[in-house]
Every structure is written in structure tokens, then in C-alpha cells.
Length: 496
Image (tube, rainbow, N blue to C red; front, side):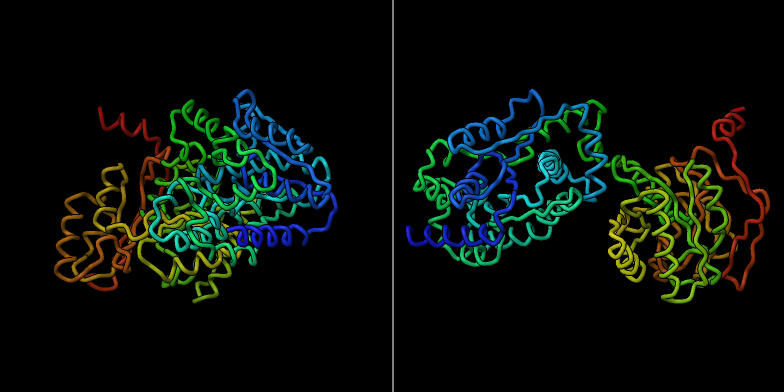
């Protein structure tokens, strides 16, 4: 074991030496991961400052431990505490940066942001992080019961590189900092992942090899063996977010969603309306609607029947709407979509987009490709949802939809313009069994228009329309004149 520890020490020091001895920072919790980094940085005579963040008056374990270890090692420690009332301001800043409302990611990002503000104030340009130690030495409780620890650690490493490290870099870059995680550097990882499992977890002690290395270097056992809480818990930031969520009578995820601004790819039909409703129900902030007007009625990507009515629907939702014209030529129309999304980013500060995609890989893949290019998250809440289930849910949630076009055997002129009921869905189910018609119209069997839904403050009223048939089962419902009716007033008319 001594030989292995010496090699770990050698590789760790080698990684630290790759950074010049200019002024640097260390994100410090007092746990064994950052403690070991602090020990070697001091041994190498680096000019560094330790930074710790926590909630004010929270009895933070991280702050308490950081102070004790800093005193013993004679470290320069700076800490920053914030009050609960300050947390929303931070959330408005960090959630658009990391583009996720996952409570764990947000809590960790909040910890990093508060600590890194101290580093920025000190004009530090590089900060070290203890991220990755758990994944190479077996730091989590679940690792104690693993049947193949090193295989599980390798899987965990992939998630850290793709998730945690990306998140931490986004926060650091936004603060003008470079973040370095020595435990995740290739040489150390390649060696550590092959260390026999018996040296990683021993006598129920996680990360035994690293803890024992610290003890051999003169670190008291009370520091080296002390169990460490995750950053979001030790700093008490997770507790603060929980408190704020409870105050608004929401789950943490729902509370955090409000800080993520989304644009809705909006066509006037049931799917885009229902997707927007589902995201709003999860408390996401809908900032705008984005409508692509195609001059090609057979567009590969975009809904065309009665697309002009999206402006009325936007008014009904009291949301701004952004229009983008396109010729509808295959693939070229994607360039116009990209232009629209860029405008939405600039004008409405969106961090993500909502789509009504159900099963169309063609649409979804192309939208995701553009979104990735623009660094936007994509939300498709209906993706692979059972078609009959979606249609039933629309009725249950007080959606009033009509068919604005039909193009399938079994459908006829009578379907155009009528408000769809559960009885109509029963008929679609029978048609599906008889001739494989898509119950939700995903195959182009029909297009829809939403007249009313819970998102609408007013109801869409059709004043003049006509049915244009190409043949017995193909036709369009052309709406020539319409307006909005106050929903409360409309209901009163019905009552009397």
C-alpha cells in the first residue's frame, strides 16, 4: 500500500506543479479532498488563498471544519456568508449560466459562485477544486456495497466529466476564472482507477487510501477521517433553497424552475400549447412564443394551417410573440429557425426552448442540433407520450381544440372545425385499429387549433370560416375572421 500511496502522491504533486506559482485560490471545505490539496500546495510553497462559502447563521459544517483545518495548517482562509433573502438574486444569475434547475446542481453552483466572488475580489485567476476524489477513490456510501467498485467508479467518472465538471467550469468561466480539478487529471485517474478496491474502502472507511496518506503526512485523524457532507449540504445552501421553496408552497424543483426563461416553438396547435402548459405547470418561466411562418403549405418542419392565429393566441396568453418568415424549403427552413432562436435569445434572454414533438425524430433532431449550437436547452415534455393518453389529457385539462386540416382515410368534412370530445377520441382509436391512423395526428393525418386552454386569459372565437376540400378525406378549415372573447363574460352568457 505504501508504494501505491507514494505513486498517488507523486502524480498529485505533478498535477499541481503544472500550474505556475502565481497567485491562486483553493475552493476549501475542510474535507479530506481539499485538505490534501492544501497540504501539498503549502509544501510546494504556492501563494494561495482558501475560499469557503456558507449560509449566514446556519452552523455550517463546512465553515467550522474549514476554520479548524486552516488554523492547524496555518492557511490563509477567507469565507463569505450570505443571508436567505440574498439567495434568489444569486439564483437569477447562476441558473441561466448552468442551464439546469436540478436542485443538486443549483446548490453546488451557488456554493461555487459565492466562494469564487472572493477569489475575483482578490484578483485570482486560477482556482483549484477537490472535485473527482470520490470518483477515483470510492467516496460515496453506495460504493461500500458495490460488487465491482472500479467499474462503478469508471461509470461515475463519465458522469462527472459530462456533468459536474462542465457545471463548475461554466460558473468559473463566467467569473473570469480557470478551475483546475487535479483529481480528474488523466495520469492520476488512469492510475487510481486500477488501484485494488481493498485500498479504497477499508474497515467501512471511504477513500481510505487518501485519508491514510493524509495521516502519514502528519494530518490529525480527526481531520483526515472526518466524514464529509456534500458541498450543498455542508454549506447549508440546499437547506436555504428548501426553505424558500416551502415558503412558496412548492417543491424545490418547481421553485427553481421560475429562474429558467424559456421560449415556446409555437404553431397554434394542441401539441405546442399543451407542451407550454406542462412547462408552466412545473413553474418554468415562459418568456415568449416563437412562430415560424412558412410559405410552403407542405413544410417538412412547421405547421401551416391558420398560423396567423398565433398572434391572437399570444394575446390570450399575454405573452410576446416573435415571428420568422421562411420559404419552407427543406433544410433551408432550419436556417430561419436559427435566426428566430437567436432573436429570442437577444430580445427575451431565453435559456431554453419548448417543443411539442411527440415522435418525429426528423423535427426533434434538427431542433436539438440548432439548440446545441446556440447553447440552448431543449424541453419536449410530450416526447414518446402515448397518443391516446395525450388526447384524453387535453380534454381533462380543459383544452378546446378543433381540427384545422385533415388528410387521412376515415376522416371527412364533418371533423373540420368541430371541438374535439372524448367521443371523437373513441372514434380515432377505432380508426387506429382499423387503418392505423395516428390518434394524435403525428403522421400528418390532421392538424389542430387551440381555441382555449388554461394558459389563455381569453377565449378564441371564430367569426367567419370555410371548409376547403380537395377530396373526401383531405381538406382545410380556413378561418377568415376571429377575435378574443373575455372568458368570464362568456361563461356568464352561458349561465343565463
